[in-house]
Image (cartoon, rainbow, N blue to C red; front, side):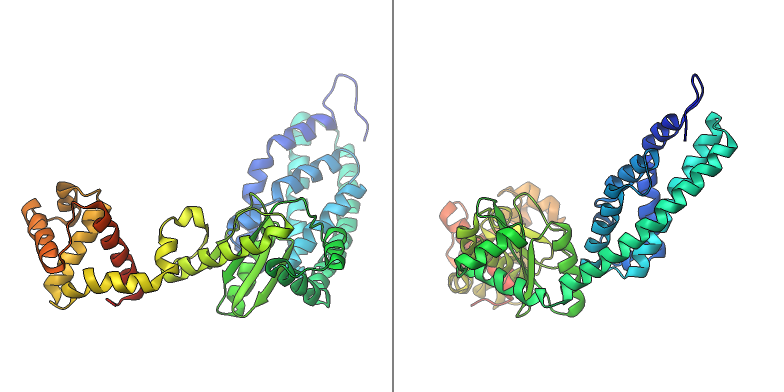
Length: 380
């Protein structure tokens, strides 16, 4: 496709097309999720992930060669990822055609607007169609490779290697295989992840989120999805997922233990999503030391629960008081009661439990007892 001196050129077309990349991405994400069931099952950020980059590379190929090896490799890589995420090959191919069609239509519109010759536009259309056919072939091959990696004999090997990393039992041969076959080198920091999955659907969604976060290895073991993700990656997990601290391969058992404690905290408080120990704070201690919570609840919660509804109101007021920074008026506003009502309930709590709410050590114990009661519904 030649350019004429002093007139509109295809370089102008592709420059203007690049300027519409964000708009194109938004339109395609909406269409994928509305029309393709395989993509509709994924979280929106996962669908968007990589799509804009793929579009920019496709525009570069339009400006050069739609059958360029880089574009064919991109089609194969993207399809491999979608296979790992559980997207059927039909949806992958339909999505590719949607994207190619959208780019072609916009290219033709821009070309017509800036005065590119009609004959050149037809030549460009044929040029694009040839590249699309080759890219679809590459996508099919990539999707097959993704299924092979996910479901083939390699899955058992990946599970064994992952367990070895997380338990600290890898051999020298395992470490060589990890570095050469899975790009998991000894000097790269990783984070262990433990996600709770109670069904096949939850396992599929958790694995999709972990794959999108760059997980090198994943395995489903005894009701959990285990993985390692690169340092800095945060999986958009739809299920409770504890994330350990960054560690080299030798320290991954420590990261795994941290992930276990984070997951225990999330499940104790019935929360979803991914979280680290730092994000969960002192609630980790409540979740991992239930025997202490039982003793504290027996002292600070049980006496009020024994008095029925009025005692439950007192406990609710104390809890709100602690969450309100020990401010009586702020507590009253939150509960829509008079400040004197708050003061009366706080005095009743102190009388029945022997606690002093002006003693910070006792305040911590009361908070712990209330969090234990929130999580377990008992008073020791």
